[in-house]
Image (cartoon, rainbow, N blue to C red):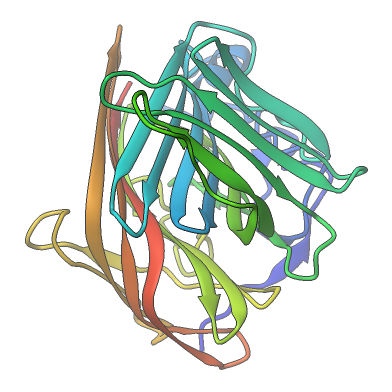
Length: 355
């Protein structure tokens, strides 16, 4: 059965100008990959300039009561963007709010001990903050609607000291060993509520309830043209919390068996997963097939609703699809336990970027 060695996270992921690759338990103090010497060997640039090629994303996925969604902060150095997507899983109604932010020093923080990121636009207030000393990850959004979308607000709290909290850090070649992609993942039990306030009717308030979240920070030395897909599932199976992240992209390492960032969290334990092939032969709004060659992953994803987002700014062009749907199939843990999944909610993303 496939396995990947789990090591303790080092103090730094860049040593003498070279990245430190591996899959690491727990969390470092900082998720920082700046300082790699000549990562784009065909374009020898000073380190200060090559650092500008690092693109960052912070994402918070949540499944709570009737709602599933994700909050994303994108940092392209030229500008930043915050976006909230969520769906009512009973009615299939989609809610999308986004905010473009002008240049500033940093949209996605390096610190994993205590930090925050925010969009302070009056009509799109979004904040994600965390502090391990106070044992709290906090998510707040207050979003102004329009003629189509209602006002929406939410306050969500996750705790780091829960026995169901699990985390992992993956540093992989991207795709060569000259440069790298860094992923920090954490899954945490969640508590909170979501309130919708339509223009011409009473507020729809979900009572405070418990759920599950998936928290991610990614930093990558991006190629000028890149594309990929990743799937995220969250929920409860056999009375135990489960979440997983599986991806395939043009940034994947050449030796994917040794270096990749696929992971399963189940009942408070992590299982590194093998590389996969993701196919959707009849279009992205038809069934996706997600399989590996180690018999650890055999999933299908049935899309329900897609949010397409196209961004063009100066030399940047990106196209993102954020799709809500459900998973069916089987996963295998590192202990050999087979997990059968049926109608597990999740979110997939398909993207292409030119910059």
